[in-house]
Amino acid sequence: MSLLIRSATSDDVQLILRFIRALADYEKLSGEVTATEDQLRRTLFPSDGAPVAHCVLAFDGPAPAGFAVYFFNYSTFLAQPGLYLEDLFVKPEFRGRGFGKALLLHLAKLANTRGCGRMEWTVLEWNQPAIEFYESLGARRMQEWQICRLTGESLARYA
Image (cartoon, rainbow, N blue to C red; front, side, top):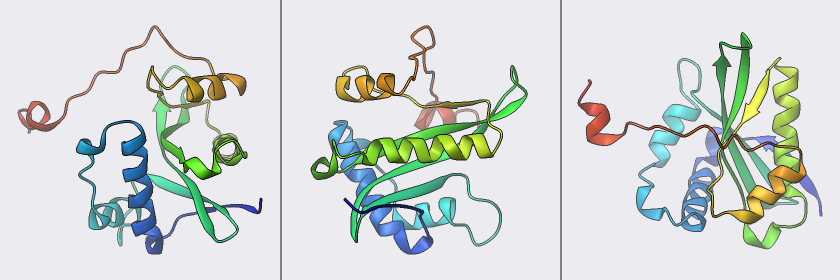
């Protein structure tokens, strides 16, 4: 294994979208992906202003192995920034070889460097391999918290 993790660039948008679609397939949510290359380019690599999220890519030599998308949020309780991991995905042929752990630890180091008080993410309740992996690293599931979401028509109603 020749592991390399690097920040994505605008030249990687096509690869990022392929990873997003592969993750959606794995999570049985393919029908929910509406992202396009242009949208990703505008939000991750804007020509003016700050990106709304960031992406890192993992490679085994020249072969793309996985990705992680994250953004910074804020904890009022801690009065510190936090790092929120939106997506983490490793292609099936690269699983069990340390790529997921390397991506997660890369972001944990980044969170520490940026003075974050926490790093958080969600996991689907049926994804037992991911749950066991995260818990093996010391992550604690926040089972008392429930995600609430406004999207589509419900969100537009308040425009």
